[in-house]
Image 1 (cartoon, rainbow, N blue to C red):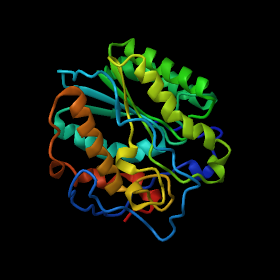
Image 2: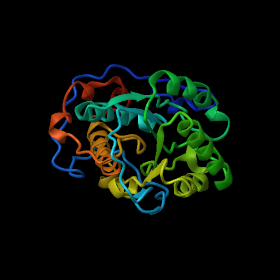
Image 3: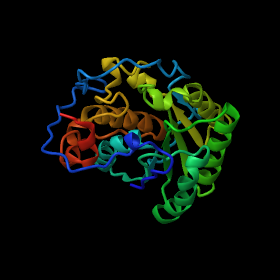
Length: 276
């Protein structure tokens, strides 16, 4: 995964170390995983808003199952990537993540590394679906956000791939994020608006259907930092996303018990999050 640590406080730069042996509970259902809640969890300064309906896209399902999925986003997405990869592998879908710790967005100066690396990834990996989770750095006015998402869509669709925009989970609005709280709240609506203008090639998924809107609630399954997810939360997201993708592209996801436990649970990304 590519890291962009420019202009980001050291607290946001996860220096991943290999985690010790980590056990993950067995999935009981789409949303029935045990949350990684710690005593240090604090209440969010506010949810991200109820947002739009869960799916925005063509009313007709696509008949072709994706063969390759490229995953984009920031460190939240990076923590979800191991579970995503396991779920996609069980489905027979090749998976690659370019989620970037300390970056990964498509808006503003911090997006420069994304625009540099994305064309290369599209050319070499040749995905037929690109999924972008709105990052914690998608700051700007709604017009700037829409411009960034439109540019992403043009770049992705220009290669023949479809774009799936996914809202971020609710996360703790600490001092680092406070100044950009308004932009964080408008990003999902901006993404949905872009998706609604080209529903055959751009789709929007509202992840609040899984996480809710309160980062401090058990449903949000945030780690002790109130921002990222541990293995259980990442697995819950991977299962939910796989089901939504299956609806869009007319395939049946592999059962979670085929992939929810395994080597991915020991990925080094979970070490700094103090997951149990």
